[in-house]
Length: 179
View 1: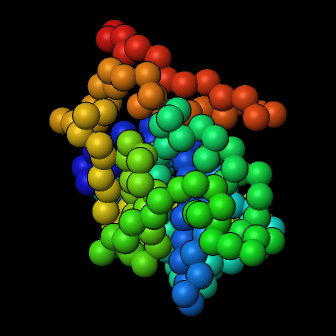
View 2: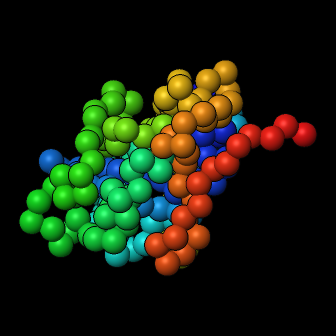
């Protein structure tokens, strides 16, 4: 948990998942960031029209999953359709697998390189005015083949995180350099 901020510090696109009342949903979000160290906190922008937001507002929790480039098509699918409009579960529609976690009721997205389970902080005016949600990270995990000892060490191209730059275009992380 003391290094949870480092899972987002490099600015990746994330998959935001939420669940409430027997329904679950997932969406892509490029505007997210770590906010604090102890306890770790995050910020994420979620539009008023997003079905995931409806579930977050009802449950007070969500999971941020950091997808690798290997999930690019699934990230594009999650970011381009609404779970509110689908006849099937959005995870299934996007080709994503969900897994339960004990820290929150929201599922995490399997196949990602990092996960942060979050509980929303009570800032309703900020959410209403700016679509900005602040949350405390209550649990965090990472794929140890990509992140360990508090550092990213991505060696396989398919593990590189995605960074949205608009219009369906992304960059991926590059090689680490040390200053």
